[in-house]
Picture 1 (tube, rainbow, N blue to C red):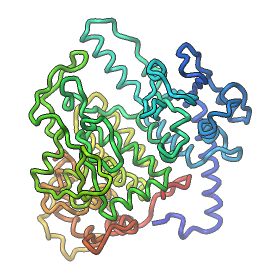
Picture 2: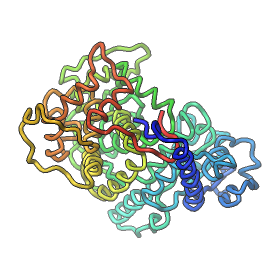
Picture 3: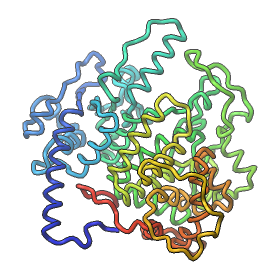
Picture 4: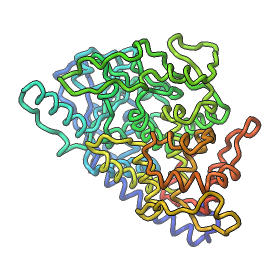
Length: 498
């Protein structure tokens, strides 16, 4: 599956030249699209942020409070990696990924950098739109401008107040990063964390908040409002939003990529919060008078698992308000409530069919989902499969199961790879077509489900068998692609993946 494997030396040199040219273009693009603002004393909320000079930084000039400070080495390294040409210390691979992400909306991104050497006050957190971690330092977080503008407008209209000015004509979104967490192991690989948050600036999908609000409390992530890498969270719209951000992060951070694949492979535990809210509780009042619906039953995800008879495990150091299950033992409908199951599917798709292709589909998908209440995950799987079919979709004119037995069928089927990977990363636990369709909230067009389930699932499962003594292996993803006639991976002008 390596597109460079059989190339002649001359062609390799040519590709390296193309990569260098592409990288230079990425550097220039990021100089124009990333706007950095540095706050040296964030607890002084009247501070005027210093605007970094991207052109000077790219040329190697580093002057001003940001560069003279010895307290923000991690943030300084990030800016250098993004704005300097590779021959002057820029990170070619990172620039390629970041440029691809920013092109989803193709508008500038505002990035606020905080010197949070001391904990931030609540006023400072509010002023700089920072997300607090436990000790009130700035946890990396980001937001999309259109989503925030729409919420502010709806709130103002509901309260009959003047509608505030919109920011999305100028900005795609904004992000706040603090040195304290950004440069610590708690946030993982800093570059991966940055890429994850950057995807959130581009994502305009509906968060289905109206289904997870009870008495003005959000249950997107459950009672505690937190989400862990190995947690199944109630809101699948949130799982999608985190999952696509994680997928791109996995293309940058090989360590977390391997860690999460190993978690799946060894059938480690999945966490599910035990929601204290009484099942069937009414929606109650919502902030700003927004309309809400009856709460989603997925708020009580643990109750559903318990009713389904899924066996719990009891690891040491378990959190009191969580239950634990073996990830590959869960029914498919529950496995996909975890963001990294989603991320593994899409990152492996990107690794085999190209990150640029994945981001192009994500761009089109974002336009489809903007201000639309739909199953984000089903729409994306449909878009990825359509992309592999040149924009089309098969009609329901397939032969019955088994009708193609014995017929040669070696044409490449890239349109089936996302569907096959969805089956694989739910551990082939679908024993019926209905269970398989539940991976996509039962909203993926039936012709895709029929095509994969009736004609190709057995071929995929034979190519990459799983079982008690057959754990998942990385090679399986390539074996599946080959079984579907995709024999070469898509070359990228940068080295990506684990």
